[in-house]
Length: 441
Image 1 (cartoon, rainbow, N blue to C red):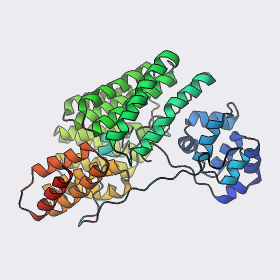
Image 2 (image 1 turned 135 degrees about the vertical axis):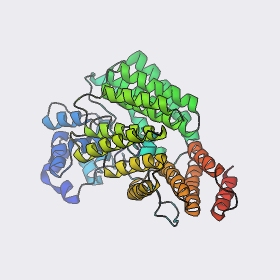
Image 3 (image 1 turned 180 degrees about the vertical axis):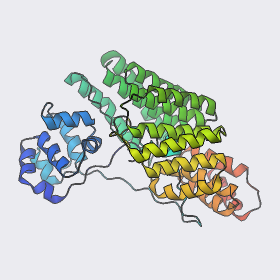
Image 4 (image 1 turned 90 degrees about the vertical axis):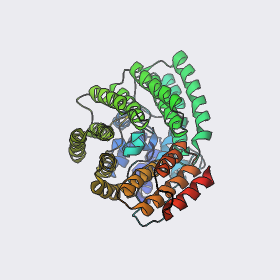
């Protein structure tokens, strides 16, 4: 899933023509609508991801123990179901109320002699850092609205606070973090006051944790590591206040990712270990696999070969097994492509170059987010350079630079500069990369 937000459901025209669905729309019977979608192969988790509900809330609606009546919620359902105009009309909504959401595909990087080198990349992730480097958390949190036992007023206020974050995550694909961060920081300030004064519930505190986590991600992208560290720390604190162990584990792991990528692998490992200890027995395999991949990359950074291979083995086993449906905040599936991304980064940092190149090539086509792809390209460029394929490495780095510059990502640009600083000055590919860096300075 992409940077935290699942794509809308795509149901065939025959679904909307079915009499049972038309009757459900006219009577605003969302229970029947969800049930009919599940008969078409849509899981409760997938429905929830599309409309911004937890799997638990979808289950309650299908069972009839919880209803849906508010217009803004119906609008969200209509958008999540990609309802055609006639279906929206039957539900009593305006045709322009949201319509079919679309997403802008991330173009593949310019062609080079390699196969694209997309390698790594959330990752977690809200956004969720190694979620970018690993590719596991590319959507830090995809299903934002947890079914806490808040009263209706508190639930509506919580949804109002959480809603903008979905849109900010979508905007991150096209808007520079420099321009987006002030808006998200302002939203965080508003959320703090609102939650502390009016919504100090598990749901409110969890939303606040997520907003803080996103500001940490954006601060990292701007190269403001001090602010990023504070915001990730606040995200952990708020998740703890919410008494949500799974969310606390997620945010703690995100802080660990950040520290590892900031050059503090020993501290990063400490936080990752803490996150692992917070997982309950019922945690889905996706969560454990992601954390094992983070451990592998961090241990590789520390040159712990034995530990790295052990963590990769566990991540691979959990990925293959996939016991337990992913649950919030780990609604993303940690699949074989994401494992290949993790393996590529870890092996590259260990210096196991043939294995790293093979893993990058296996994972590249699955990394679609612009910033995750750009960071993945830089990991791949380093491996290619160490393998003596300098011109290819520079071409891949130049593709990353173009993406980083277009999105105003200081983090990506700095990665390219660090890579360039260690290259011989006279190689043809290096000259091209030097010129490209000069153009963005």
